[in-house]
Length: 135
Image (cartoon, rainbow, N blue to C red; front, side, top):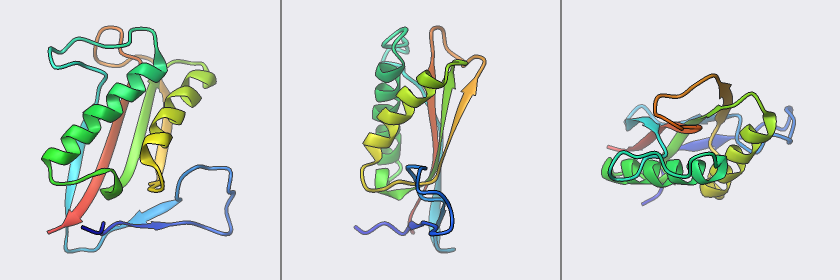
């Protein structure tokens, strides 16, 4: 099935950003609002303690599961937000590299944020998203 999401790239803005600057979905699309995907295993334990890349990877795995259960996939993402509990830009970049690689050619608009703390013990990364699918 073809995604209803249209990514919009600008020739007037910098090409340094590794994502489209905007995305649209038709009014007829069913929107899927995803809770923040956390680096938790099936028992609710935080995985990859102290490892930003490992936690970002688990967040992407969990995001894929939530998308699938909603009838969507990575190519249906309209927007993502990556939260990293760190004041070090290198940690944000490490998390982003994992998330960006998982998106493949579907470089949906995204925001990368450094935050003070996240909700679970030892949690460093969380990934939010909004998807759109044909209704």
